Length: 472
Image (cartoon, rainbow, N blue to C red):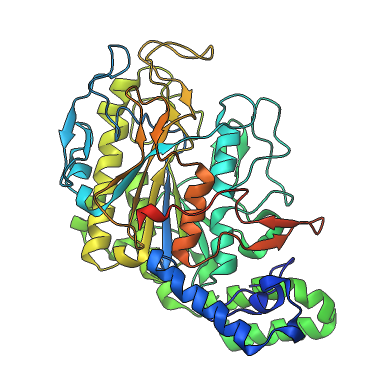
């Protein structure tokens, strides 16, 4: 893969060409062997805090945002009108309780941890767009409307977390760096918020598979025509480079190298054939768009994909309706929607995924993150905006919860704590940027790494904050 703005990333844990050019702001010719050795020693010392423990990341993005109080941070002692209708239940992790609508996930609690003190103040109003962008890029949006509503994505956007992972921890040849499945990220009419590689260039954009995996997936783009061989295809590309010149070819190499390697990888193409799975496994994940997308994500992780993102089927501000693909944006009818639809679908699939990864020996090296862009308001049916109806909960960026598992994270713990009403962090407050920094840290990417934007200005991978070392 080719970056338009920075040198190629490393293929292993040794110092990359980029390390040589930028570490310590030293010129290449002045970088002596002792300096290299010290850099390696520093990298090794970080591993005791979980640095580089994850080979891959699986991000389950619950766009629309579930109510944290009604799922994984119950508040049974809160006043009426806040605590909600669901009772807390014990889990397989001592001291950790979920609500009764997540019984299967409760049995897997010894395999995951919860961050119960996430909070953010997004740009403008508490709209979805700005919170999504901050969660996906580790930075605030500069071009959104004053109310925080999304604008169409552009190449001037900062790169998404999946694109950064693909750039700085490139996969082995013939493997995907970044794949996005199930559905696109969407706020209103704007699609793809915080999803692309932005200024890093199209070489690091996700491979998007938004077909419904309940049906056979069409992946003709990963196979050669019947009358074509890899050798003939490579010869055609080489001939093209001769005619177009080296300068033109350089902008094409990233796509060419990746595409050629993928076309030659039977195991990567095979990961999309969910029909090869035993029916009982497909049933365990759930015969829904979400369930089969998460099964596809597991297969992609098995095939060596670096970063897989599964987006909830409904857009972030879609009207919540009955059915397995409805929205988490429960401004009204929060409790019947969660009890009858959202939570049964999510609970079945999330528990199956964690259990399956653990049984296959993949959880240790796969960081799993399940999170929305914010939480829901503690008070029920009391609008902070004009569109909250009976039994609904409004947007609430000030406090919410994230599930995190594998990749070196110690399981069975609750990191941080919200207050009695689930309104604000009370202990160990965590900013979404720190969650993103933690993800990079687990992958072995230094969150302090800098790159150049389109105006040649230095940018950090996260705007501020560092990894949550207490999780490891």
